[in-house]
Length: 320
Image 1 (cartoon, rainbow, N blue to C red):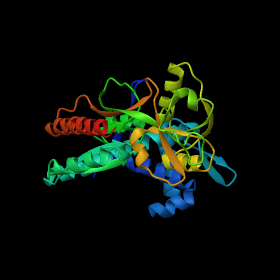
Image 2 (cartoon, helix red, strand yellow):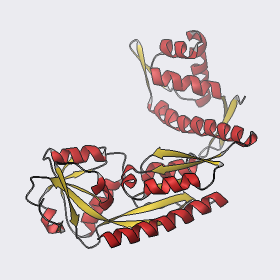
Image 3 (cartoon, rainbow, N blue to C red):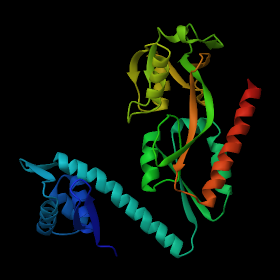
Image 4 (tube, rainbow, N blue to C red):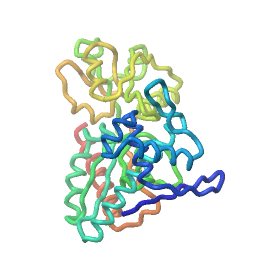
């Protein structure tokens, strides 16, 4: 059982050694914001728990909690430490599980991160084929933004990511699988609802709903950037966290939403989708992976994704 971990402060080149137990105790107290409740969760007495947190603070050289009346709250340093240790312990737990699977010669685990809107295109078929690619590989799926995918790739939590915004990182390789046209979702009773397609001037005066509101950057920033590149300023009236919420707000008459063409499969009786015919307005579907990952299985996955995307794009073109 691992009992210690090492933190290296790059700016000071100082090495701290502290027990993983202290970090887990800290995370529990941070979650409960109560030493009493955390002690119950950890099945230990409160005094030993308080001592361990005190030792942790001495090791760090800063307070991670501050007392407010009878309660406690995280300091700014504590918030930072919680965020980064959660990522560390999650990666460690996943590493331990993977090590056990390898040692027992169980199935290999392969993680895929995706943005929700890709599920309306060829992604479901791709996942089905991916699961059949090798019976000894277990496929794990995680919904996350493109930015979150980059962090998860570098931490080893996933092995490939499917996103929609253009980001660059020296550790990440990227491939554009598709460049989807865009469509506009409007209420069924909207004056534009009877149109087969619209251009940018038709929708510019319309109140626009963006999604997701956070975390950023995201697909919302991609849409804003498209407007900026063409010298336009959209009339943004609302932001929503989820695609389904944004479509619901359209039905309520709050505004319109610009979505990837494949989202037209998200059918509602009170919403109509209209093709957006505007030069340069599209939404890429991009696959990301670690540049230093040279595994044979990853190469098969990338090849499968490219072939299926090409077939899907050809089929979509025929339907038009």
